[in-house]
Structures are given as C-alpha cells and as structure tokens.
Picture 1: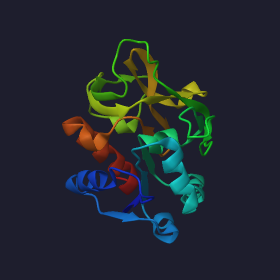
Picture 2 (picture 1 turned 120 degrees about the vertical axis):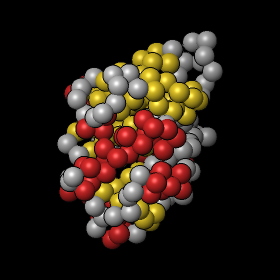
Picture 3 (picture 1 turned 180 degrees about the vertical axis):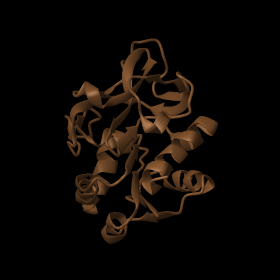
Picture 4 (picture 1 turned 90 degrees about the horizontal axis):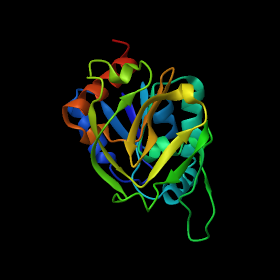
Length: 209
C-alpha cells in the first residue's frame, strides 16, 4: 500500500486516481501509523508554501515525513512536496520574510523573475533535461515533456541530488533523487503517458519488481 499524506493540500485526489489507474493500492491518510507502515509514501502539494507547510506541521506530519525518510522508505514528493524538503522558501506570508521548510536537503525556493517576459506562474508542458541516471525516468526519451504549475523554483545546493532540470526563462531544478527518495517539481499525475511511466517506475521501487 502507498500512503498519500493528507494535510489538507490540493490535488491529493488527482494523485490518488493516477496511481490507482496505474495499478497501485493507495490510502489517503493523515494517520502517522498508517503512513509509517506503508510500502511507500507520496507527499503531494498545491498552493502557498507557508500555508501548506503550516498545515503539515500543525498535524505533526512533518515529523512523520522525516521518520519515513530516515527509515529509507520509498518516497515521492510532488510540487510543494518537493519544495518543502529544502531549507526555506522566499514565498513569504503576510509578515514577509523567508519561510522555513523541512531542511532535509540544503537549498532554497525562489520566485521566477517577473521581468523575464513570460507569464508567471508557469502553467503547462515543458521538457526535462536529464542530468543523471534515475529509475523514475527509465523508458523515457531523453527530453520528455511533463506538466508544470508553479511560480517558484528550487535550487539544490548539492548538485549530485539533481536528476533533471528544466528551463522557463531561467534554468531550474525539476527533479531530485537520492537512494529511494525522489521529488519532482512537475505533476506526474497530469503528465499523460510520460507521467504514467514515471508513476509505474516509482511503483517498481515501492514493490521491488
């Protein structure tokens, strides 16, 4: 069973439906016991960084996610579930200033420049540039197209983490991988056949087949 962490963030049901379509058994849950006993864990997220991370912390689920990572459980972060793994975001709340993330990895989240001549947020299809071999991308062409919805982008300090980059006015980190920990800025559940390959590749990591 794959646990999808429920912390009142958007897009959770779309993730559930996509994984179930691919043949996975999924449970949307906020139960620490259910999450920690799962075969794999997905941390989705759509919305404002401060609000989403606040919801995660209020439920004590940030600590649960850290436990999952410490245990070496197969893990997939999607969109904000990717960004929250890093040290901080410049997406400030009403009081301004940086918002701290989980700090699993060193790096930060910044807003796309407003003067680059492109609409922000980036909404739509964009290509990936693979930077290292990664099981998530097995079976895909060298520059597959995936679906993005975001105004902020990740810059990882440890460049060995980065599995794929993309470009929207500026280059940015689009996916990371370390061991059985994966996280992506784009939405596999909205990325058609390419997303289905990525989902099934993650399922192979979870189920060991």
